[in-house]
Amino acid sequence: MYYVPIVTAWNMLMAEPIDIKYNPGPVTTRFHHDTQSRVKLLIGPFGTGKTTSAGWDLIDFASDRVLPIRVGKRMIKKVRYAVIRNTYPELRDTVIRTYLEWFPPYLFGDYNATEKRYRMRFEDKDIEILFKALDTSKDVRDLLSLELTAAHVDEAREIHQDVIKGLLGRIGRYPSLKDTGGVDPFVTPPQVLLTTNYPSMKHHLYRDFVSNRIDGYAIYEQTQEENKHNLRKNYYEDLARDYASRPDLLRTLVQGKWGVTVEGQAVYTPQEFNKEIHVSKVPIHPQEPVLIIRCWDNTGLSPAVALTYFSTWGQWRPFKEFVFSDMGIMDATEAVVQYCNQKLPYGCKFRDIGDPAGRTRDATKQSPHLYIAQKSQEMGHYIRLEDGIQTFKTRRESVANRLQRMINGQPAVLIDPSMETLIEGFEGGYAFPEIGNSGEFKTEPLKNIYSHIHDAVQYGATLLFSSSDREIDEDEYDMMARMFTETGKSAVGGY
Image (cartoon, rainbow, N blue to C red; front, side, top):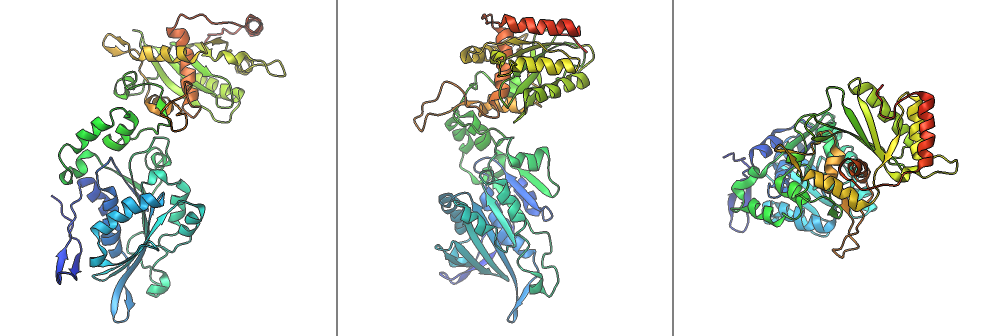
């Protein structure tokens, strides 16, 4: 067992010294030993002692990494920290309580509850901790005007990234060069410490620390094993049962995995979609010419397209997603066609299925279907969209039924791991919004970043896996047929 030698404080009540020991797990120990990262993130499920660990890191370790300043006849290490939580009730009930339980004022100094300021004096240290909540814009402005040694942001997934970036300009400002006669007072780089449960893979923390890691940022990922030696028996087993009906929270808060924030009731149930079953462990892009079924959400300013194909034995494989924001359908079409021309095996054929609302004409007698046809024709890759079925119940069931099928012991749907938006939508990002706080939910999903790619996949599934009839605008088909005749390109032809 790894014991960190920590502070010896004088117990004024019993007139004797008292040793306070702290027993971190292996991941947390590495977190403490990291003295060079500018920002370090300690992330894990419930019960891993993240807030406690950050408190120890600041009070015992970081306070030793500044040069002492002469105060009278003594050389004192003076530091000032900001410890931050999103709201005051959370700050009071979790963060402040944790800090004061581990470092009680009767041993270490004076805590001013009105100012939320803790002044600690022990050994050769003079530590000032400013507990800050961010309930108002004034709170944020006040925080970003401080002169700090370092900072701790608790439950960082709830804090706007601009606040965290702003803190980087406030740390390393105390003590200052004038306090040490022009010598850099920092023995090691000043740090911002982040602690949190797991957020969504769309969160800025995932981007900054995992998918596009910023130089100087380090992540320390805890598992349930990290702090089990300090927890009661069956702690996680009980939580797993408690959260069984909320797989999104089970994943992020209990299992300790990147997940998705569910704003309502997930459209697909855990019985229908299981990431371990339906998401491939390796890329599944086609390696030889096949029929590519492109599924389109081809209306509005957030078009989305999913590229899919079938294996030789009938497994449906979505392998590439395009999720556009504030983009016209012609620009989206250009991006899709360029990818298909450049990245797919030569000789692939294509079938395109989309939203029948894409046939609605605008003031110029054009429609999204025709814009797609026009743009693709210009690029020598003519696209004629077939109409999927618009009824939401039919769309959802077309996908859900396929998800629950097995073929030769394998799932009938297998998704490429790069399709993060589609996968997170299946895990709960694609959801029915709650009606107020009633516990009742609307029957149509929330329109958000996940809904458009799911709409696209559903339109395709209604033709691939449903026999329902659909209405066809024959006039528009005639117009497309004329375009086809003029260009000599096949509606499903290769390139």
